[in-house]
Every structure is written in structure tokens, then in C-alpha cells.
Length: 502
Image (cartoon, rainbow, N blue to C red; front, side, top):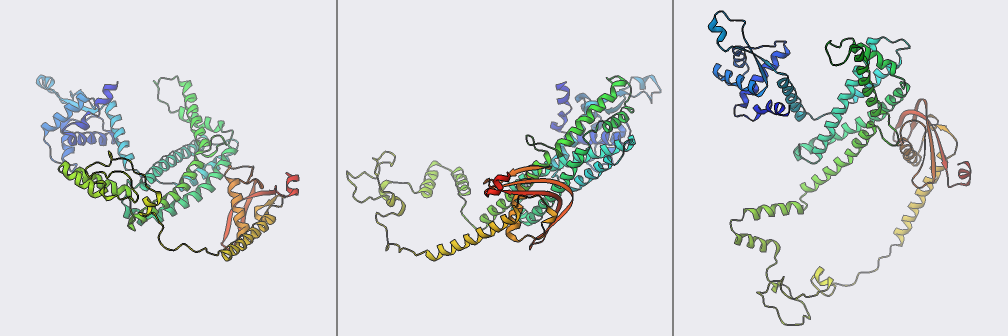
């Protein structure tokens, strides 16, 4: 089995690989047109019109014979045009793709597609999945099997496309940040669009993934829908398979259960195993500061700042290009300046002078002060520094800290009431209140959908948040924040009332 799988790819390493690929393309194209058998003259005629170099009938015959020997093609005697005994004994064949050859062509097609794929973050796929899940919920108690099957197929196909393209995009994005798949100038030219693209997808993913997760929880008992789809597919199973007719529906149902489990794991997770949508959102968010860091590195390079690693690589190339060892030694002395010991003079040195011919690695050890090594002198040059009076700066900093603390305390007193309140009832928040609110909201939402209870990192505030129906609008000086409504309770654990209530 292994040798046959290897042999069908042997033509890729053959000297006449271009002709072999053209011949296999002819068979693949005719297979799509439901033409199974081809005669050698049919293959030659197709090659004359495919835009490649002209080939003769003898070359085509040899290529077909080689592909048959490798297992890519199957040859059957062509008895359809036999009119004499001589024609019967003359070698005439009808060629068609073998099972191994057809599988190899599909594998090569997938290989080429994956090499050229950059992937994309499909916010539209999220919307398609959301809409079709809502349609499943609204089918009622006696849904139509064809509608259920169609909706499930569309959901699974969109999820497969979303997952594959997201994985390919994040991989290509990492290679882009490593500057492997793109030039620096092109990267700097489209960086703003890339960052805006990531931000738009993250915002869509937060809203759509939450709605999809809620709908999936409503469809917890989806066994009946999956069985409808499995029965409908089992009705089309061809006879003569390995399984009995009655077992086909169970095989199909098991496959649909696996697909549904994959859909749930993508959007509905738990604290032990976060869902794939959350992992994708985290990676996409992290990609934005990573992109900015890459841009910063490129800007530093363009500004002419020293890059020690690049300098050492250039020096290594110079060493490799030296024609003789003597040239390499001269380059080493010019680059590092470590020739004889005569360049170093130390005041108060005791002992005999060391001849200049003695290598520094063999000369006796000489201890020198740290200041001499850093500045080249034992004494510090110049007048001593004056003591700077920074009392005004300290007073200004104290006033700023006090004002900032007052704003934070007022924000805590406004939000940390210990009583439940809807987000839609918060009204207008000043910048300090809005900043505190966003921090608390982020910590609560990071735990996932549903009712959550958490505390801030310093343990001073406890947050309890529960989703409710409706939408909320929170107005600030910078704009309006809109989203699903929640009931929010913030308890100040540092106050006696908060501790007692907790």
C-alpha cells in the first residue's frame, strides 16, 4: 500500500514532469465532464489546444505508458474499433484515472490551494451561522426534514470555512509580522488597513459569538434535528457498502453528533476549556500590539539606529569572503582592536614590563578599577554636580495624585453602591467613572457569557453581572457605548457596609 501511494507521485520528480502534469490535467478535466475513458489520440488532441509546447503522438504514448506503470492511470484493451484479427492483436488501450491517481490529483490540488491561501477573518460567516441557528430555533415542534438538513449543512460548511480561513490568516499574519512573506515597504504601506481589519473583526466576533452561544444553549436538545438530517442522508446511501442498510442512519447520526459537538466547542466553552471563538478573539487582539511592535522595530531600522545583530552578520560575511587567513587576521585586528598589550597603560603598575610580543592571553593578570575601565581615568572629571531642589515638582506631583485619587473615589461612590442596576439605567458617565466602568466590565466579560461573579485584582471591589433582555446605551464625553443589557452589582469591600453585605 505504501509503495503504491509513493509511486503515484513519482512523476513529479521525473525529467519530463511538465508533460506528465499536462497529461494528468487532461484526464482530470475530462473526469469533471463525466468522460471516463480517453484514447491516446484524444489526449494528444487535447494537448495541442492547452497552450503548452507542441508534442507528438509518440511522446504522448510514452507518457501514458509511464503513468500507467506508476499507477496514476489504468489501461484497458480498446476492442471497440477492432475489425480484423491483426487489429485485435495490435496493442490498443483506453486510459482512465485510477483510484490512486485520482486521489493524488486531489491531494496536489489541495496542496497548491493551501500554498496560495492567505486566509481571512470571515465576519460574514459569523452572521450566517447566527441567522441559521435562529432559523433552527424557529422551526417549531414538527420541522421539515429538508429545511433542517439544509440549515445544518450550511451551518457546518460556514463553520469549516470560518475555522480554516481564520487559522490560515493568523498563520500568514504571524509570518507577515516576522517579515517572511512581505517586504518592509509593503508592510508599512498597508499596516493601518490591517489593524483596522483586525479591530473590526474582533468587535464583530464579540457580539456575534455571544449571540451564537446563547442560541446554542437554547438548542441543547438537538438530537431530534440531527436525526432528521441523518435519516435524510441515509436514504441516499448507495447499496453494496460495508454497512447494512439499517446501520447507515446510525453512522450518519454519529457523524452529525460529532459536527454538532464541534460547533458547540467552537462557541460554547467552560472555565477549564475555553471555546475556540474566545481563543481566536484573544489572538486577534494580541496581534494588534504585536503589529505595532513590529512597526516600531522597522521605524528604528529606517531611522538608522544601530542593529548589533545585523552588524555581526555583515562581519561574518566579510570573514567568509576573506581569500587567505592573513586577510582574516587583519580584518579581526581592524574590527576588534585587540592586537598587542601596548595599547593599555595602567598608573601605579608594579612588576616587570611585559614584552609586546607576549599574547594578552598568556600575560599575567592586571587588576584595574571599574572607573578606569568605564571612563579611562581614575578620577572623575569636572566639578561635582549641584544638588537640585525638586520640592516644587514633588508638590505638583502630590497635587496631581490627590486630584486623581479624588476622581477615583467619586467614581467608586457613584458605581459601587452594592445595589443591582441595569446598564441602561447608568445614564451619562464622566471620564473617571467611565474608565472605572470599562475596567470592571472587562474583568466580568473575560469570564464568559452568563451570570458571573468576580473581584478586582486588588480585592477591593466585587462585581456581579447577569444578562437580561434588551440593549443598553451608556453616554460619555467621547461618545456612546451600546451593547446587550446586563444587571450589574458592584460592592465596595473596603467599606464596612460592603464587607457586611458581602
